[in-house]
Length: 549
Length: 87
Image (cartoon, chains in turn cyan, blue):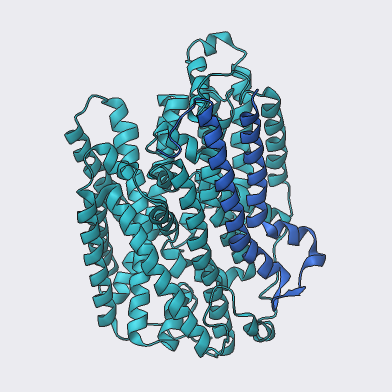
């Protein structure tokens, strides 16, 4: 079948909207950073952000460019299973807050790696920091590529020029603003992208004949009979039990391991404010996520019923295509500005995480006596360096925009989340278990991915490409290794004499807020054995054939 | 072992289960296919129930979670622990 490649008809309006939004981002960044009096303020926004602003910021850090672009390609490919893949992402902040956000906030951590350093020592923290920086660079990379593609489309310039110019603009405003600027910008960007996504979607639904256009997230059931007629398999679940189970270790636990999400909890004014932000996050995230499903539904419906074939290379532009078909040019321009804001909010959070880890978790531990002024300069350089690295890697980008980001979720689930969860909730977890588990499982996850060693891959197809097969095996492997190695080494006095085990255990009680130390709290070896056995069984189940479709 | 500690463990486990239920109803529908394709609010059940649970029900669960864990912090604070919860 012949397809006509979609192109933006009038880019001038888009340029004006995007240009104006950048002016606002820079102004917010510049104005906000004046509150930062120290490097701690720079990385945590003075731990002063209120619950609504933080809730908006949390949602905004999560609403990547993929919300506007990458995921529509996945909806066309997966149809309803996409909804299951996406819906569980809303669990991230509530689970982070419940399992480790508030204890780490109480500890005064800058990043999850900061906690790993305090709990498991420098050696383990360096291993996790390397993985976390890799995860954040991959995450930022996907956004950089997306933003560059939008700039390329908008300004009609070469991809490399678009990437370098767009990337430099983004890195500039993040560096200037620090966490204050990033937080207030993220809140503004969430409002911008929410309005730019949901309201034009209502207009699209109205033009398509939908009667529930006034509330796009949920009111489109009158289009369901038409969809069932045009695309009878749209609501089929398609995949097997293992596919849906793998969503938990890959994306739910994966999101819990993403440092830039955890960092949002640490910027809260206090723990109650952090929990209030979690409720607002669920509200804002829900509106945009549900609208994403509606947009995907509308895109599939449009493709099936309009007779206008969409080129497979344009699948990730469905949101823009629908707006160009059903809405005036200025609305499309506004949507493009919203898409750019979505990309920027995520890159900002990624760069802040990279910068904090390089400055606070690596350099500050090697040279702890550096002055405030030097640490601030190092902070600027760390963010700039992380951004430059993302831009350089994006010059030769991977094919499918969204895959590298989703695969990075799995890596976070394998290398970060189990260490932090067990570190907060299980005193017997020690440095040997953490180091072995993080290193071995992280390497195994990379080896069994379809990108590096083609002969050693668990499963195949999309589930292997996005890291679901690898995560179902490797996340339980991390829990298994961490618990068993910790319990075994605990019985070797020579090894235990080399680490401050008692001090590590006291830290656990302290970050939970207890005024005294009680050795019985969080110290059940029976729980460790149960976790080890269940994890081993899940890992074995992951490599058994079948169950995916 | 005091009651606040037991409450902390209980809340964490119970809310983890509730959150996972809200976000992973796909497992239920794939395990029990008989519940699929029942029309609810004009949508197939396997589509609209996970969406409503993943947003509206989740919000309710999270609001209750925030309330109870805040109260628990106050309880620990009253024992003389960290007073950081609302400073």
